[in-house]
Image (cartoon, rainbow, N blue to C red):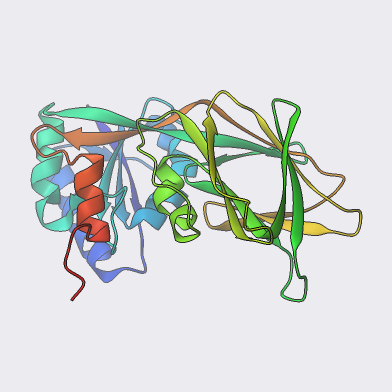
Length: 267
């Protein structure tokens, strides 16, 4: 018998209304809703992309679990399944009419603590009164570049449509094995976004003994680092297994056209 773990954004009215409906549906189908992610065969996430980002930290504790992402928020780059079709879509999943689309994580080591980032790692100046944050970046222990400005974003292809895009970074297909580095308001105008291979291991340090930088992972403040701290970022084998329904899957570009209004007349 299948077992389900449910994540819901309790601050969104539509998400909570659907939460009640899906619980009744699962009960009718004799599917147990469990409280431990390790016991579940699949997970249902109800909310926006932010809800999925928060849920992903728990989901990857069970590497085999499959994830059904229902859009109960606004933009839905990751949570593609519409609320009005969600019950029908879950039934299709239970019938086996689906496939899996995988999203990779960055693994981040800070002060001997490990974190996972589905979207991005952000380094930014630690207070408004500081003019610049200065960072040194190494790839596979070889010096890459210094970054001076408001900060630096290191993201996955999944995260390329989030903060990185807002900061002028490229949109990268999730099918590409890559890491993207996007400077935030760089002091030097020749400092541009760069896309590197996912096999590269990045080490990032603060440049200057009296300097500090905040570290943000998927929208959550994690730590304050100094020149004594090395932050190591790399891609490991962790993946988020997203459920995609046969015949209803949207390709990367159709999602971009819908959410970003590509090609629409501006006037």
